[in-house]
Image (cartoon, rainbow, N blue to C red; front, side):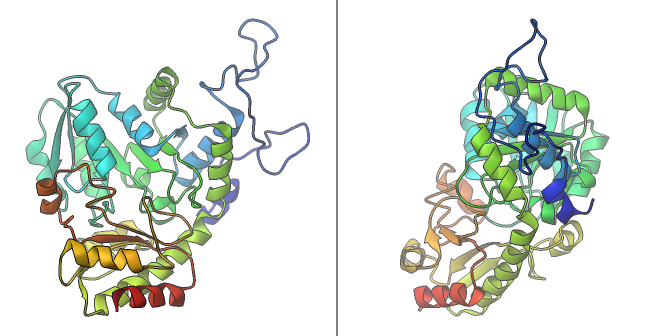
Length: 380
């Protein structure tokens, strides 16, 4: 199947032989009858597996060209499961421009458990090699990164991982599988905050992992079952529904994102604009090669470069909503320094460009003229 067809039919089968329901039903049940001890139809307790969640996991695997999908109660629960593959003394190398929630999980939880993290610039993949030693076990990559939209060469990083017998995990939340498929570029694990574009309607919190290797999948399924970080059947139904329009939504996100990025770049009150589609954006050529489009996520600073100037803009937006999160059909504006990345010390976040005047936009699928007019009135 081609991608657009996969979003609707990929991995799906008739799981409702009773009535032939076109959409998988919501199996809002905890436990399942058995004819004899251990004699069941593939489901015994919904922490282990649920038919609605299974349908979603098969869809997730299909659109990422993977074999095994695992749906979690949140994106951070998915990250947490990956980190539980490792033990005290192991080392993980990750980007220094990282989602604040991931940074907090790494430093506040798993560092205390004896896992060492290296936060480094990954714009040049070769920079990774100097940090690899006999304790290194995982490379964790975001691309585009949150919120600076930095691009990391997945294929180049995968070659380094394979040469050193390391796992490579890629947070594909910003790009989505419509724009980028990390497993095809050599990654071992793809992670999503499915709360964002996969769900697409700001009404569910969920995370996912997709892998191809069966042994790795079994380890992650076991961690999920043992730790219990599952999503419910209602949430599974909502994200499965969201995936069916993913290709249509991302097309519009990309179109509107380009229009907004170009408007901001031309505005006299705007300082820097970060969007991978610009030819002068760092690693634009890599983005062009490994992505089908440049997405609807944009960050920018004000010319004044002050907290006050950024605050004034976001407070005056009318169509854009000042709110956490991203990836919904509605346009959102965020202030990373005080919202999504507040857990990162000021000195550390400013090194990567997350200054007090930085604003992050999740450009939705509204009429582009309304979005531009809203930005104009807030700026002027």
